[in-house]
Length: 411
Image (tube, rainbow, N blue to C red; front, side, top):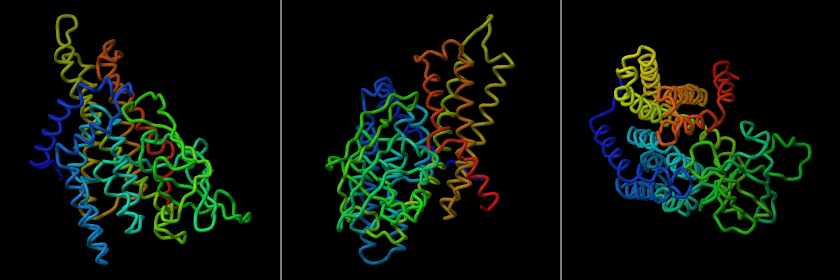
């Protein structure tokens, strides 16, 4: 059975040291939005050499692709950064336990924005945008959600492009976009309106474009005020006749393959939902640690509350949740290392279970702390708000049920 290696544990201890020194003292400012997360992430990358590793791996990948060796390039691309390997999972889990929004901003920029360009872009597009993204010199956003199309991302999509000579004209709006207010590079999905009225709007082709901040007609809205995940800025994007040249169309062709926006998004959905399990594990681990320490130190009627059976039950159920979610994470790591992709249905199952478990554990942590747990001074209050976001983030849990059932039924 998979277990953390000695190297993994050494890396985990180093990450915890960085968190204690560089993040915990700033959590309050991160949670109020006073301090955007990006410089802290850049310092994390510099401290552990992640930026240099990513830069080196990307250059090797691009060099292989330039030499017309796509198989070798693909292997190199998988190593360009921490990715889904054990160290990436450990880093994400540890960060989630102190400030979930940090991971959201990092994951969307590196995993979704850069990942989509990596898997769908031409060589020229990779050379143009990936160097800044993989090192986190530039912040990325991934924009598919709209006010009327959350779980129905494709069918309800209203943002559209029309051809105008060799260019496209983009109009529409995106919402709930992680990093949206400050993103330098944005991956935007929009439907092609080619004037063919015989095609139902829901069934029109979806194209994927790369936009840069400052383009004429592009407006990045101010950060929303949220219930949780407050260290990650979330906002809206508005497109008012944005002229998009063809070299910004991922794959630079409308004819299927790498330009297929629906296929691209589904791959990203699976990766994002697998990632929710590691974030859930981080929140469960931190809640569990805080509760065990509190139960040993808090006294009631002359004895530690850890001696009360109902408190022990809460701790035991937290441990069961921790073990289950950790085993899901281990399974995903093993599958990734073996080159066996997790299906969308399996990823949805992981997301559904782990987010529920994290939310239940966090709410029980608040209950175990009693009145103290309801106070912002005690971090279980923040963890409870953050955990709840995981039941909505990356597709609401209700839609996960549909994907799981479709996988079982083969439809």
